[in-house]
Length: 186
Image 1 (spheres, rainbow, N blue to C red):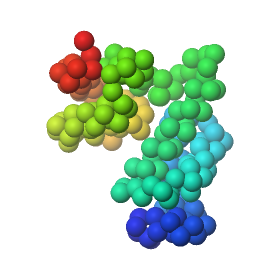
Image 2 (tube, rainbow, N blue to C red):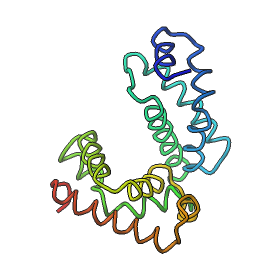
Image 3 (cartoon, rainbow, N blue to C red):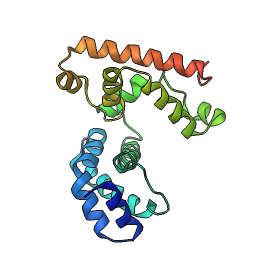
Image 4 (cartoon, helix red, strand yellow):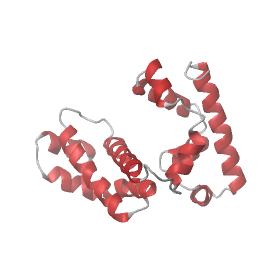
């Protein structure tokens, strides 16, 4: 079933929308959650919470790209769950490693909240990513959106570890420069 038909099911408040969404995007949502949480039960819970959020959000929202809409919900739910579970301890998952790598590239929440809305930063980062070569963009997104390990990225693109690490470092440096140019970093 195509995405437009699925979205129309949500708008009609037809409960079939959830089962069709799970059938088409269940593995996608579960994978995002699992890469962050590294726990099957928690990943399944976040996947199911995604369907509930989609049900509650559509309508009034009408996502133009259903997969991105669902992926964003799953990612947010998973990160929230990870933060709750790890409030007093540090974990060793790819989420933490990825965030550590990026922490000097993007402004912290306090600084950012004082300067612009979250949506504006997202637009600027999106424009930055569009300016990268396809391979740079894909490697960056695999690492910092899907939380792929360096090893997984190497296997996916048939690169050596040093190439991937260097590519990610240079892309983060370009991001810092881009954010400085846009006035987000001093």
